[in-house]
Image (cartoon, rainbow, N blue to C red; front, side, top):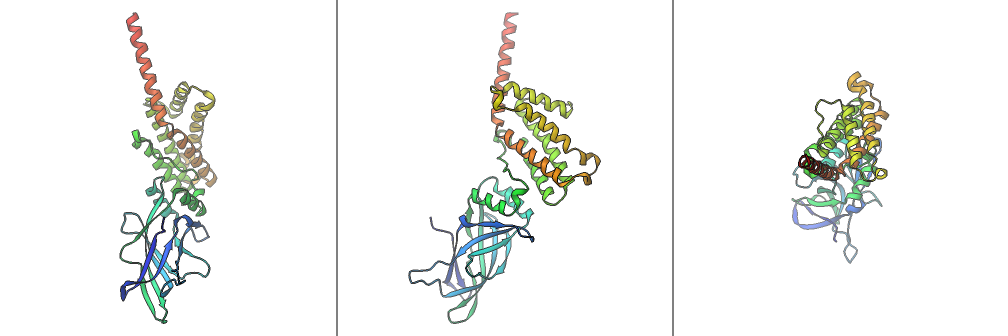
Length: 319
């Protein structure tokens, strides 16, 4: 499959290609120096059969990168091509990476790229050049992008990718993932107490989502008692207790909830980074495990209700 290509032309001669750059999405990489995350795009000048790479030599190249389907995006600072290094640096912030992750939704990272700059012709004339009126689309494969996130330090904030919310009750489960995203942003911003508070709410929403699957409403029941009820219901649905540690899950939810409850009650300054990271990691792991079993929980709960209804009918007939 041919690589995405950007054809550059001088402003004075828009129909004449003076050099080209090819983009290899598979070789995209990330880094996190002290200044913050950087995504490096791999851009090379292809050569024709005669060995020529064009009539112009690029001196400075800048541009614009956008999420696919959006007209506006991130302005990329102009930079010179580096000797023996075919990479183009795109500085990002943690917040910008978070916004990209919200749009990516578990798939590949799809962007459009438009570049411009100055180049020197073989005659020595320096001219302004552009890659055209229309941006070039490209997609970084999912696994490659996850590696880029890790290299950018983003994976240290949330090392487990959240699965899509179960379709049947997306709004219920999305409420959990939304709080986890908020907790992750607060953690990245250094607001440990606020991150713990968001994690605590995520745990409440998580219990509500599991209860919705199991057809068990909380009502006015205290949170700890409600989680115990859910744990017992999950255990009753499990055919193989060794492969379904639902009692442990119920205990983890209760423990994590209590662990994250200090800042909301005692003040946001009571939170510590290690506590916030631990609570978020534990809650994210619980979400991933339980969300993937949402459909199984609903099916088992429906079957249990049908069996209970059959038993009731049988008892009435007997009476």
